[in-house]
Image 1 (cartoon, rainbow, N blue to C red):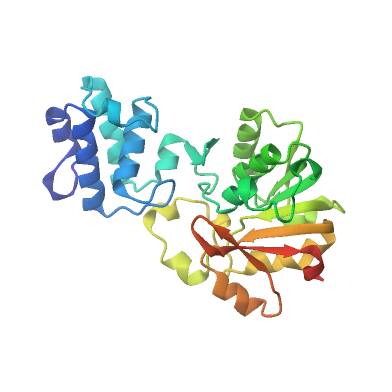
Image 2: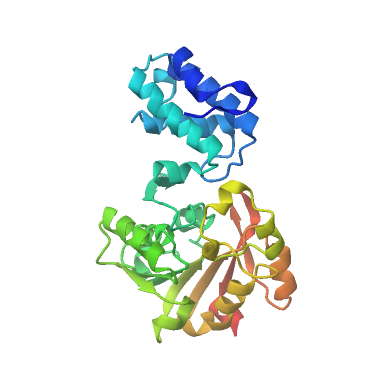
Amino acid sequence: MSGARGGYSFADAAEHLRSVRDLLRFAVSRFEEARLTFGHGSDNAYDEAAYLILHTLHLPSQRLEPFLDAALLPGEMREVLNVLERRVTQRLPAAYITREAWLGDYRFRVDERVVVPRSHIAGLIEEGLSAWLPDPHAVGDALDLCTGSGCLAILLALEFPAARVDAVDLSADALEVARSNVRDYGLEGRVTLVQSDLFAGLADRRYQLIVSNPPYVDVQAMRDLPAEYRHEPKLGLAAGADGMDIVRRILDRAHGHLLPGGILVVEVGSGRAAFEGAFPRLQPTWLSTRAGDDLVFLLERDRLI
């Protein structure tokens, strides 16, 4: 193991640390010292360190306290320190190290072929669309555009038990990851993976619900991305000068793929101002999410005419 900044090497640590508590303190110090960027499952050094330590030791991810003073075997200590060192020196998102990401209580397989799942639409699928779709069993057809790992398509299938869900992505590599996740949840009969450039491969298919967490990072933001985000596929992030290139294409064709009474739900992250500048005549409903009220919009079919 190579040395860390400030003269505190991971190799030296193996000789002096003994417990999970020791490791946690050391990890937080090194993460803060390296000025890591978070946002792929946790938003601070402590939570990320705890997650990586518990995952590597095959311990429950929500049960840190009972194990804090547990002594580690030499091999366990080396294994955890190797993981922590990779996080610092390679600046890999934690999800790419553990090969998993969580949306609420749901676990998904991930790797560098897909953007790490972190969509604000996930919580809305569970609790935020009842005003438009009051009966989950009445939803027969749903679509997830830019599905990536397939997480939103899977959540749609779980929330709407009668729905047939199409999961679309341009990337064949991403769809391979999605296929693994669909298989893990036993949804092969209800979630159909489609390699397509947005609506191009869907013929005349129409849906009661279309959701999308498309690329929406603008040119300047792409230039300024922290190292952790540069490990993610550019195809899943970049969306032109104002970040609205993919959203424009979705809005251009969504009406023709929605059933009467259908709704479109799209995430734009911090791009509300860019959205409103690009589409001044549209009047979407901005949905309340756990992270804010200006990240995801909803449009009913009739507003897309």
